[in-house]
Length: 177
Image (cartoon, rainbow, N blue to C red; front, side, top):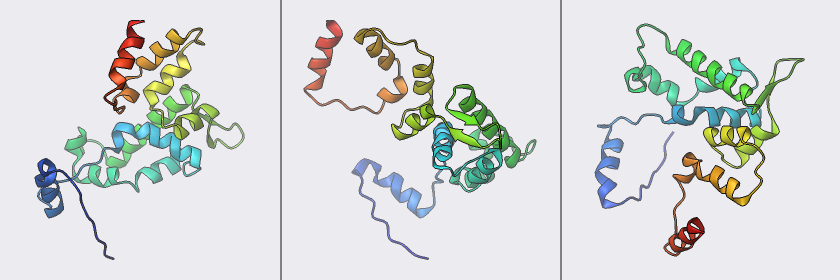
């Protein structure tokens, strides 16, 4: 019923957090930007076993709450289609993509969704969907160069890597040779 939060931040971000805490700025969900990765994770865990449980899971998220309150932020026209219909379409599309790329399979006997070993690897190693698709579609690498080029094309993964001061010189020497 109650809690305590301590926010440690820079002076540049202090005003932003004060406006969030005071309620003058709304906080929006970012789940939709990486939903497919979360779906494969929940399927791996067994939380999601079919489209019905996927929709039920989505309806328990902050994304669903914010979608109902502010559909315009998510570029949705709530008047023409209900939020549940939109979620069903998004869910069906993402589940189909996961199956198409062999990250998730439906069992023939009971149509339950299960993560393939590739889907489990994507989940365990936090590999983003576009990178995983690239890996799945690539031919077997025959050289270190091929492997490095494949990794270098994975912009989604590389965005979060921070280099140490001494790394740049080393990486530039690798690139040049």
